[in-house]
Length: 490
Picture 1 (cartoon, rainbow, N blue to C red):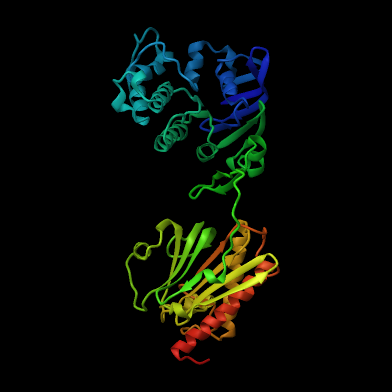
Picture 2: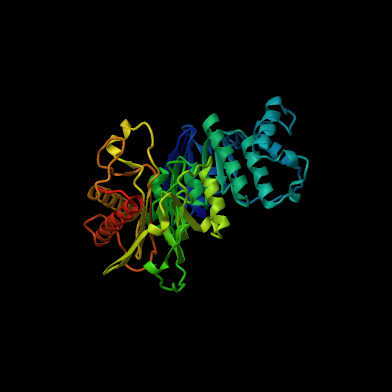
């Protein structure tokens, strides 16, 4: 649809854009990224003919763009520039209607039903219907931006060039606008080339990304291939962390601060754990990076308070998450700063120990009830739960863990728990085989993210050894305490 080959150009004799080549297919959305001054907007102006090129070619549908007349080009390419100068006062409807200029034989002398439809649809899609009779200079910057996007959409050209279309828009209107543009690309086969400042928006909505640096193409490809920590750091000179979008296979970035703020060292110790008949709790001086399968605030996040709550054996609730949140709030725990688990085991029998190493220490907390013990390899043969029982495990690390170490720590802890059940000869009451856990076990790994960097947590590492030994030791002791309380014997 559109081919850019070895294009250079800029202002006067200075080339801002240097030897840029790429192509965009019909129905594809290409996002152009890069730091200020990298040539993003200049490239768009060269493609649209606003600025002359000093070399190279821009080809549209196999024809050199310079060979199109002004109206022919406007029927092929609609342009939303970054800034708008208003020489005349127009209403919103009049402004959007200007997008139909390429199809007029005179000054709107041939206005058709097709023109009317295009304008009405564009106004509706950009949610500006209520402003259609308002003069544009009376609108806010964000509202004006939506009007000019509507004007470009009303043009119904097969190629749409956008320079920061979400400028001045709040997040709701950013989403609405980009959803509309994306839908136009998919439903009508419109080719979209858009400049973005926001890397996350570009990654989320575009099929491919073009990353520019110093007027040249630094990278072009799928968002997964372009939005990489090393590449973004090199081009933008900023520290970032990439992570997957929660719903789509698109990368997103988080900016990491380089502020010279002096961090006060802190650590978690065994003494920070409090135990009562109602719960086991830990309140940290600062938030810990946490990965858990808890009832409240499960998953990855940063939290300061951890609660393992005792519930009665006959506890039943239609919405456990809502009830748990209400309980925590009633106990004075901050909703967004607390991870909450629950157990029918007597929390006063919790086993807590701190295991020291050269890197720092690991605190292990375990409550164990095994009346509901399960052999996971025989789970398919089970058709009912038996008795209440839960093994809840906390692993608190004084050290810095990358994401992979959190996962390895969970694996190591789970293996150690299974070994403890084997040692204690805990059986699945329905299959008679050695149990590997219970059906309601929960596990939490948290780290201070201070001190030594600990890249791995497998059983061959110093961290993994402490986790493995600690979880095994505390789980054995917790099971023994549970058996004693129940009057069980091996």
